[in-house]
Image 1 (cartoon, rainbow, N blue to C red):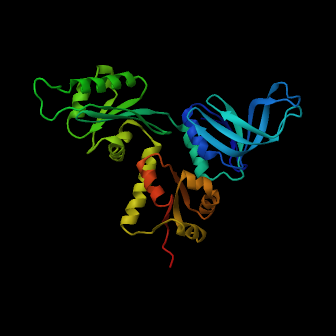
Image 2 (cartoon, rainbow, N blue to C red):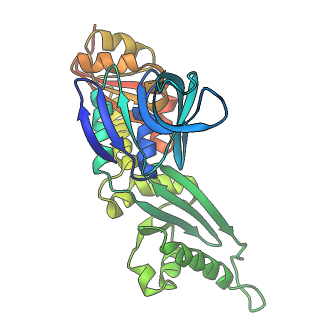
Image 3 (cartoon, rainbow, N blue to C red):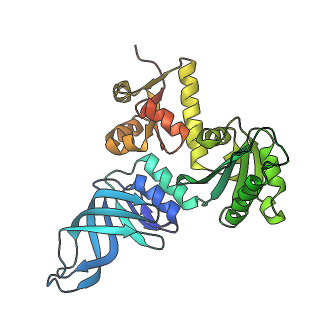
Length: 330
C-alpha cells in the first residue's frame, strides 16, 4: 500500500491499494462512520446514463472479499447532476481513495504503516504422514486449505500390494505444480515421510523447500509448525507469528497467575487505567472501538488478534477480550 498523503491529527489519509493483502489490512482500518472519497460511476439525475465522478460517502457496511473491499454508505458529497442516496465503493488493487476518521487510533495507524512496508508472501505447508498429505497456503490474509491426498497404504507390504509409490508421486507432483505460485514450501509431519517426499523434488523446487518436524498432520499439525517457528524461518515478518506471540505472552501470564484479566471485567480495568495491553479479536475491536480509544488515552497499548489461526481461536475462547495489567486493583 502506498500512503500518498496523511495527517494523523486530522484523521486523514490518501491511499493507493497495491495488492490483495492491502485489502485485508483495510478491512480492519476502515470503520463504520468513516468517510471515504473515491472515483466511481454514478447514475445521473435523468436516470438514463452513468457518469464517472468523485463521490464522498459515510461508511455503514464494510464487506471484505479476497480481491476487493466493498464499502457501502450514504453519499455526503457529489456532483449536482448525479443521484444522491446510498452507494458502494469497490476498493481494488491499483485504486486510490481518501479516508477521514474522527479518531485515528495508534493501533490503526501502526497497522497502516505496517501495510505500507509489508512484503506479501505465500507459503505452501505440506503435512505428511504415511499415505496422507494435507496442503495449506499461508498468507498475511490468512490460511487456506488447498486439498488433501489420502491413500490407504498397508502397514505390512507384500509383493502384490501397493508400495506407496502412487502416494509419493501424487504428493510430489502437487508440490512441484504449486512451487512457481509460492515463495517457499515447508514439509512437515512426524517420521521420515516428509524426507522421502523432499528427495523426489526437482532442484528448482528444493531451493525453496524446508523441513519441520510435527507430531501430527492436519490443521493441528500446521498450528504446531507455526508455533515451532516454521513460518519465521521463511518469512521475515508475518502477522500470524506476531499474533501468536501476543497470545503466548497472555497464556503464560494466566498460567503464572500474573496481572491479567479477560472478559467483561476488562472494561472496568480500562476505566481505572490499569490496562497495559488490551488484546482484542478483530470482531470485538469493531464492536467497541471506544474501548480501544480509552485504553490508548490512558497510556495503554491496543493489540488486535484475528481468529483465522489457533492463537486467535484461543483468545476467542476467552470471550475475545483480554488484558495484561500494570497492577492488580484491590
